[in-house]
Length: 114
Image (cartoon, rainbow, N blue to C red; front, side, top):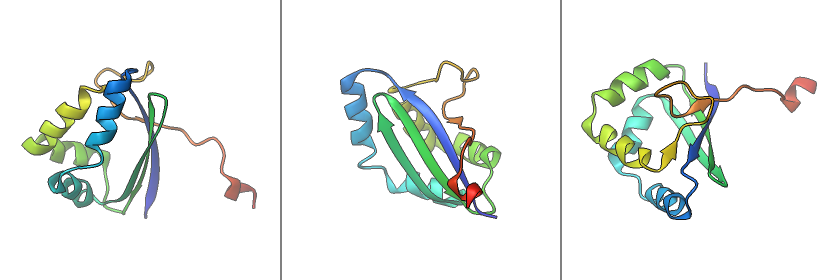
């Protein structure tokens, strides 16, 4: 079954850091795109307001956060990318130690009322 996930993360609240982070995402390497697609992520979008980021991620039936994390941990180019973008990111105040992107809880869906 396909699923959709919503996640949040903060950037460092510095205009230069935010601009650099956005610029990095205008030229993501084909290897990083392939690593995303190979984990059965079919669509990913990032949105920003202030220094808060929101990710919408659509996945196929074979996606797993655990499998993605294992694949990423063993891929030096993904680790290099994560280290680079990590210099501009900061954890949400309620994130667990070492947690970057935090899953958001759904609270309203219009389709539930239709």
